[in-house]
Length: 133
Image 1 (cartoon, rainbow, N blue to C red):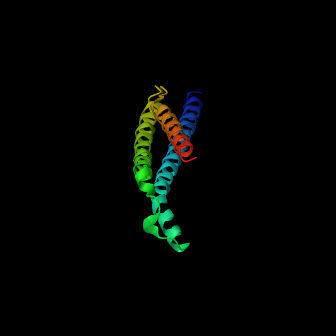
Image 2 (cartoon, rainbow, N blue to C red):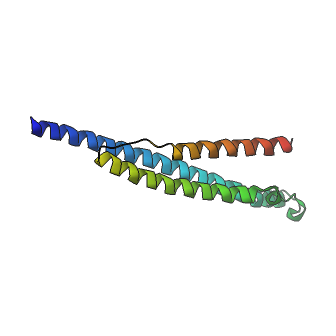
Image 3 (cartoon, helix red, strand yellow):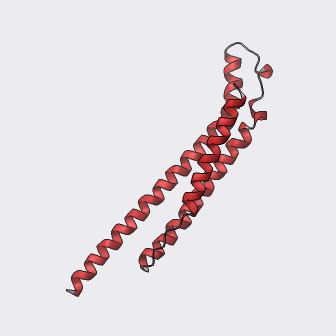
């Protein structure tokens, strides 16, 4: 009877560890997506200058997109993505220890950070789009 209980407990912990790993990988995908978006935003100014040149315009007469903040915003997104990646790893290791010791306590820090980040990105983009209309 005790042996069966140990096997059930081991299976439950294995399932919890696998769920923890899936959650960690989801956070990693999210951080990669944010960093990729930041890279695209940062390189957008270069794309505008190149496309203007190929369409027959003078690339030096195009408005400077980087002065509008796209470069700084893109770099900030890359840094944010890297920070989320680091925090996800820390949270993954904390959860791992808590699962092993049967003392799991949910934390909201990473969830709150991502929510506020995406919200502020959305507000920034909306303000940027409204200012160019």
